[in-house]
Image (cartoon, rainbow, N blue to C red; front, side, top):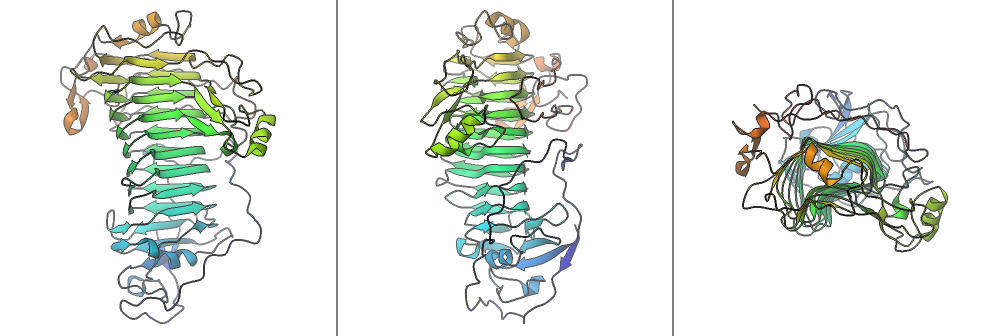
Amino acid sequence: MAVLALAACSSAPSSGGSPSSQPPATQPPATQPPATQPPATGAPSPVDAVSGRFVMSNAALISLWVNPSTGNDSATGASADQALRSVSEAWRRVPASTTLTQGYRILLQPGTYSAALLPNYMEYRWGTSQAPVIIQAAQGRGTARLTGDLNVFSTRHLYLIDLEIDRSGDTFHCEQCSYVLIRNSRLWGGTGAHETIKVNQSDHIYIEDSDIGGAEDNAIDFVAVHVGHIRGNKIHDAIDWCAYAKGGSSAITVDGNEIYNCGTGGFTAGQGTGFEFMQSPWLQYEAYGIAVTNNVIHDTEGAGLGVNGGYNVLIAYNTLFRIGSRSHAVEFVHGSRGCDGDTATCAAHRSAGGWGTTDAGGQYIPNKHVTFANNVIYNPAPFVTAWQHFAVAGPTTPPAGSGAPSTAKADDDLRIFGNVIWNGGSAMSMGFGEGCADSNPTCSESQVLTANAVNTLEPRLADPLHGVWTPSLGSGLQTRFAQAIPVWSWADAPAGVPMVAAPSFATDRSGRARVSAGHPGAYEPQ
């Protein structure tokens, strides 16, 4: 990407100097900008079809250099020897509350950037695909360390590249944002973060090839996020779920990640949301059109994967290892819905056809059209789940007036096939009862036992204790073939919810092509 230097506008700084006074705070626009809205169906994808990564343009950018040791906020910032001292000043120089016609690249020289050098609040920077705002470590990953968080509002085309945000607390939050990219970065919340990354009421959010962890809740928390992916990351060390997409989130791909060392579980599509935080038209289910593919999930105390109130969710070609030590391997249960105090908005969402009430609510959001196919669940002895293979909730009755189906099911068109499960032996319970009952046409116990290899084939892996997840030579996975996966149907989607394109799983986690349907798990046999 070409870089256009900013013309000099002030004298050169003295070595190690600091600004004589604080730069003025960014002023908000005269009128509140409209809330971010997801793009219309059919908008062109900014994702490369081969690499699966977000595509940045090669347009010329204005450069703003920053050096926390020798910079000066009175300098031009146009070159490394004219560097600013603070990221705050660089951010202030990006025009606010106007659609940019020229993009900016803020280049961070090596060093530590304390919270005092970072913007307190980052808002109203409206980049475009040809004029983005990039904050990047000038000398590559790990060279620029931020010890404060980035809190962003109403910003578009913001790209964070090669950064390290290392603190005891939340690292990145974005609300009402569009086209945000986090790539090749490390975000660590230590023991003080609630969520390491939180994104809400936003669209086109892309997290790639990064290391994200350290939270007492979630490493990644998406609420009402529409279109995007979480791809090629290490996501780990959270006390609750490692990551989830909930609150009506839609069109999110979770692919090729390593997810590990979390409490409640690995990744779930849906969970529970305050009704007022959802966006129309995604006001019914917790998640829509979520594809979870080619991931390695290991060492979670709870379920490796789950669906909690999802519509058209595909979980396929994942490898799960040593999961469910305190409970079960995989779960399909209801999502939760309540009102967190803004009763007027909750009532308006209900009037618009949403499912919810104006009180504390409960766990009654159903699942529909969920497929769990061609995965490997491998708990080698003596490791086993505490109770059972699956947790599938039985039907429940939603609160009167909530608008949810009168009998809310967690197993409506739940399909479980093509999986290889090795966990605890023949005495291990499937976990079915009222959920996946004998009368269920798609996931009764007899059907699931027939359509999957349950404790009949050990899916030996090459060296999982050292991060080698490919099937070992002679593994039963060499001769076990995956099954074809049907495409999503949107014929019975709630009114106004746009269709999401069917996901692709033509290659495995390493990029190796799958022949026909391939084999179960994240990796094809060598």
